[in-house]
Length: 320
Image (tube, rainbow, N blue to C red; front, side, top):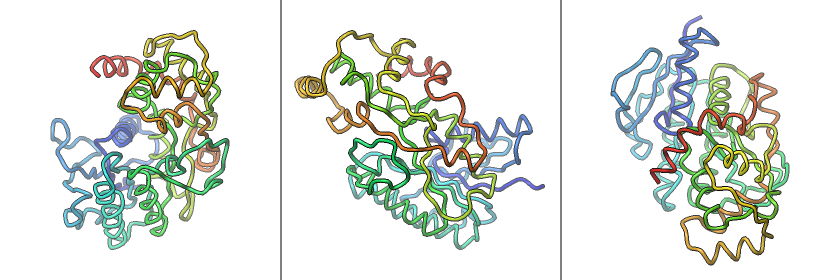
């Protein structure tokens, strides 16, 4: 069987770089269907050279003309790139207009399968407790989430499988654990007993799921799937695991939600009250289905995986 030809966006990002590593490991190990990845990037990767199974092609989602011809000969488009900060116009340029142009290239090239990465943040403020896909109406707040929801709709119209992970942990995470560390320093207590339940996934497990979807014909037809580990974790469990790894300072106090908010407002920082709520209160989404229908093992869970990324986090937190 010939190698699968994959066009990948976001290959230098947090999730995309792990997808590349997963493909390269499978090349080396001989597991699964072999893939040739055409990695679309605005800039050359570190070292600037192609490697076995991976070639780099120039392209910029904010410049649709640069995408012409990039999907020619591809069997699957794996669209992981997105803009996650900035204002509405900047996010629209990449997440909406860039996605539209890329999908049009895939249509012209006759690419039969598309995997599109979104986020559970499209649901907006919670609390959300064990909801199925679109169990609540999406109500995104930030420009990034608003435009990523718009990009989802374009991808679904093109026949894509759309993944909505919750919090993503692992080496390369520059948001979740750094945000928890800042918030713990501002609100040094267990937050509302640590009772908030969260959908979390380790980046290595998410990458395996994406590679599995790229290499198989299931699930068939356009659909949205939650893509966190099937078992949610409590905020208390997450914070305890990070503390055990030396990534957070220990605390003994246990404050009510009202006291936590009061302290947060008194101590300035970069994390907003909305972001605090996202990390501290219930935001979990039923995620069993995609692992079941792909046959991809979900792995031991994100807390068990922290041993693999703790050293990276220590360096990153110290540098911050």
